[in-house]
Length: 78
Image 1 (cartoon, rainbow, N blue to C red):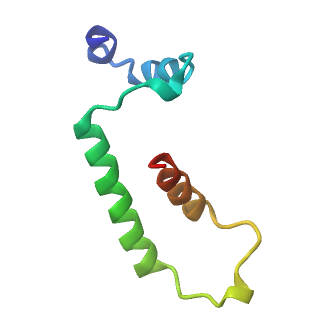
Image 2 (image 1 turned 45 degrees about the horizontal axis):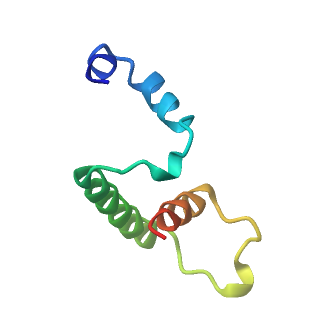
């Protein structure tokens, strides 16, 4: 694994990991989980800063990509 990452084949490695059987059983290292939690917090801050407050009746049926990404990341915690 180290050699694959050291040789600049990170994208190929990531795709291989995503295709692994029993993907849900992969244990994420603590430092990566903490980094993803930090990133989620930063995204939430930016979402509040950038997106205006919207009334419920104005919400689109299909949320913008950014909201779907945040929802997908939050769903990963469950």
